Amino acid sequence: MKKCLFLLLCAGPLVSYGQINEPLKRELDSMFVLDQRYRSYISEIHKNKKLADSLMAAFNSKENLNRTLWKYQNRVDSSNQIRTREIIKTYGYPGSSLVGKPTHMAAWHIIQHSPDIAVYFPIIEKAGQANELPLSLVAMMQDRLLTEQRKPQIYGTQASCYRLRADPGKQECFIWPIENPATVNERRKKAGFTQTVEENAKRLDVAYQVLTMEAIKQRYMIGDEK
Image 1 (spheres, helix red, strand yellow):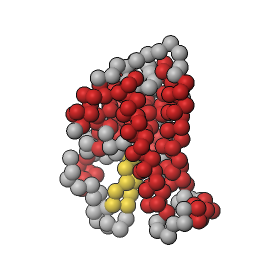
Image 2 (cartoon, one colour):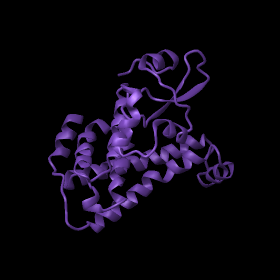
Image 3 (cartoon, one colour):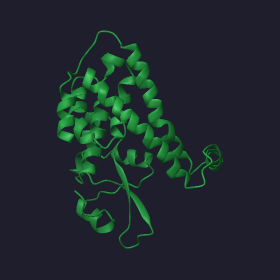
């Protein structure tokens, strides 16, 4: 199924227009707002009780608020992903020459939150090479794809949280293992990142440690999935 989807998407060219497609730009701007709508709440409710109480009342939610918000966000994501697939089939990646900045990042966010990153990444990579999308975003998606594949990431952009094997009731967050960590900041700079891997970890509220795949599999309940 994913192979068929990839062939279908790649059938459309990576187009470049001399003027902005305003209707498509407006549509993608709206899709991006929806992509972030419930995620912004989810990231805030644990540190903003007033917001959490307000949302509980607004959604008339008697169950876990986080679960309720994700239920709504997942519905939005599904709709966004279907439409993004149609857009890419028609236009190729909707980059800066087609929809302008910052709208050129909208489809990237939607894809980054989809289960089909492996299908879309070659298209994202081509968009970056064509200057339709910042290389830093290409790097972030590549890192996410590698973490999903249980492989070391390249740029140190991805953090993960897992339960401890020694104490399953406790969870820790960490920067996913990095390939050749000694030179990661050189790679980050080349890809356009302005922060070091240490600064990025601090931004994510995670203590940076140099870890290996073997070490995290021993410490955390990651499992044997491939």
